[in-house]
Image 1: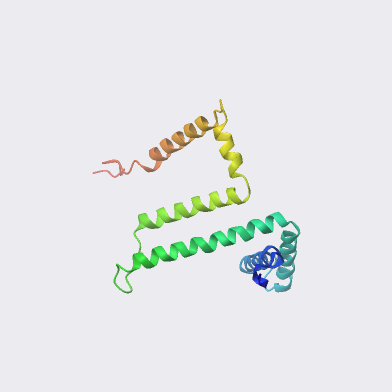
Image 2 (image 1 turned 60 degrees about the vertical axis):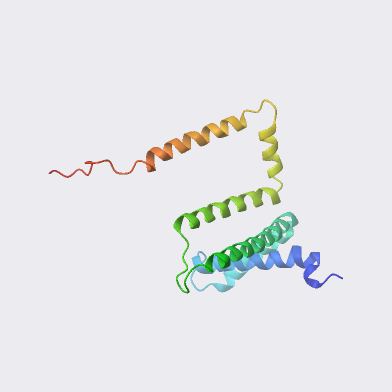
Length: 168
């Protein structure tokens, strides 16, 4: 038996509308783009953007799928932090910088893959790399190597000895 929370109308229309309306309203209130103390105008703009979103069902469906992805990802992160927190003294839980940055990188990668998957763009990208005689993969690898080399030259050098510019 399906409940109200499982009905397509609620999942594909009401929830995405509420999410987008709330986020747009909060951003407009925080940024005060349309003026200070203009809650009614901010609400009308957020309402219009939320209704436009619902009018295009594909986008509302992507938001619903990304919200489900967000819920699952947050539970996974919570379980990791709980299991990691067991080994720390109470009140002294802090992740190493490397773990934080790795987690942020993995989260960004997961969001990019999820967006590509839910927008049906991932198959297109995979096909572009698989094509016979395709030089796209070689070009992408070449560009990544160049960017990595430039980044290593810019940020990897550190300070040279005696290069402080001070006279002795």
